[in-house]
Length: 365
Image (cartoon, rainbow, N blue to C red; front, side, top):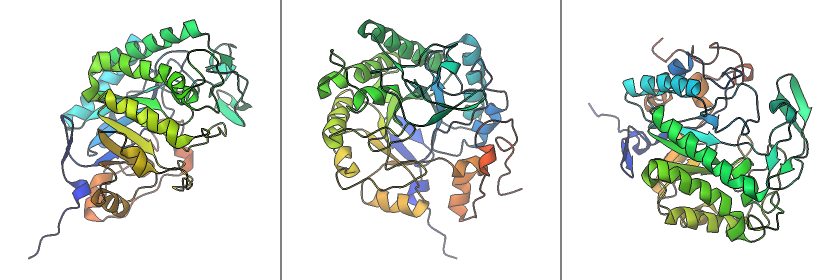
């Protein structure tokens, strides 16, 4: 009897010194189950452990400090109580022989005074996002953020360093720096949101100064072989943020600098999450990838067949998948078996309790 061949995407892979079960990455997904102190619930250990069949899990975006918060019920990594809760999660994942990275997050201007006892969110420049943001009591209009003073920026670098150290205490296998989706680091990178005239604005070199300082601080804690970074060169939401005036030059310089630092991987959102893979003729992700010597994680609406095609062409090493993991804790097993995938109603995506979060059955039940 002929045996069915296993997709190369579902076979073991190694990036750097990290041995993975397969090339499927569970993408970071905000699920808003933490308490008001940013502590993940006990049942989050079940949620992540159930999905340990992924080659690598990247956690939901996790605030590096109280100042970093943008949305209610998102987890943090700046207090001992948060570290203890995350340690329960990493232990659960490791008991199932999974690998898990923590994503380090500062929302910058994508926040609201309601999250900061009335204080303004911070940003590279005082430029107001478009639209509204979800806070404790519903949707509210974005406000004009406060531009950071230059002498405040080294303190935020230290917040990243401390958060990275706390992630190590919590037992993670590494960390991913969130430099995507128009949050603080990307706000400094893009000239649409960075209008500074000091050493942190203007030229590409200046706009990259703060993000690269963050990367170096995190590397000081973990070593470059356990640090990745997420980018989104053409994403415009939240806040309807305009793209950079020269995306290829700006992000090409960024990736070259990250490559020189020896990062384990870049995690690239190809297009706009939940919207489209279309990027416009001015952006080539294959060309951007050539600027980086480490592994490349491709993201956005990947199916197994698209991942196989992309792997065969050499345009990516790993593939991150988000929403299908919500209702399919055994997603990799389902892909291997060609089994149908369940879909989670949107009402379960954000907020609530364990219902629609850690109670999805696997295909054997």
